[in-house]
Length: 227
Ligand SMILES: Cc1ncc(COP(=O)(O)OP(=O)(O)O)c(N)n1
Ligand SMILES: Cc1ncsc1CCOP(=O)(O)O
Ligand SMILES: [Mg+2]
Image (tube, rainbow, N blue to C red; front, side, top):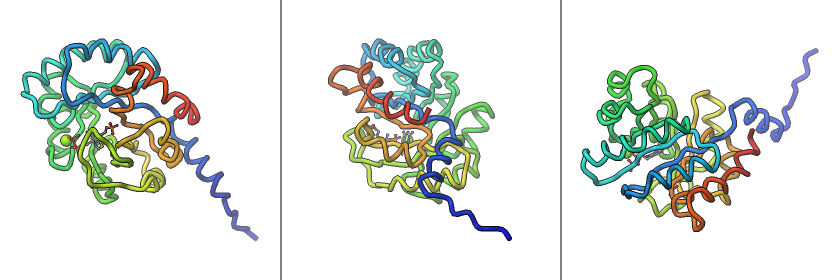
């Protein structure tokens, strides 16, 4: 006779977490480019492992995005960090970036894919929507981003998902999920436990009182718990 084996929920959570690669840091740039930023970026990247960096400049001319991207690209390459451009697949192509992050109004995944090719990393904003996540990956996205999980001064946000959306996603898909919005080393644990593959962080690193290197280091403890 086959007995049903009831999995201890804590074991199930741990097993699920261990079946995925460790959670990693995904840095989001400040929304204005300061000439001192390349040095800050080097300090941040030298302080601990960072998987990806998103250049997210808002309300600036294309030429400024291109200038900033061209200055940062060799730094990111030297640290082996993926270079993702926010919003603009066309400029990502011009810069030779590794990928693009698309919000729900930033153009289609299919168009970005045909422009950038199959090796490009294309991410989509899903807010708190399971539907957006499934739609995005069906269209060929390489990761889905949920948030904002916590209040943030970096962007006006209207969606506040529960961390369980990450658990749900990791149960149904192997495609990586990103958690974003107001994440700090102090509040990240439930997101990591729920299965976030990446923590996307802006303010907690660039506005850290001891500087960006300290900001990156401060996340190491929580990330190491999954490695
Ligand atoms: C990793 C990641 N997740 C979400 C966003 C937000 O994208 P979007 O909704 O398009 O808003 P803006 O960032 O463009 O203001 C993101 N950029 N990165
Ligand atoms: C771009 C973005 N999208 C949702 S929240 C957010 C801001 C992330 O920055 P921070 O880590 O400072 O909250
Ligand atoms: Mg956008």
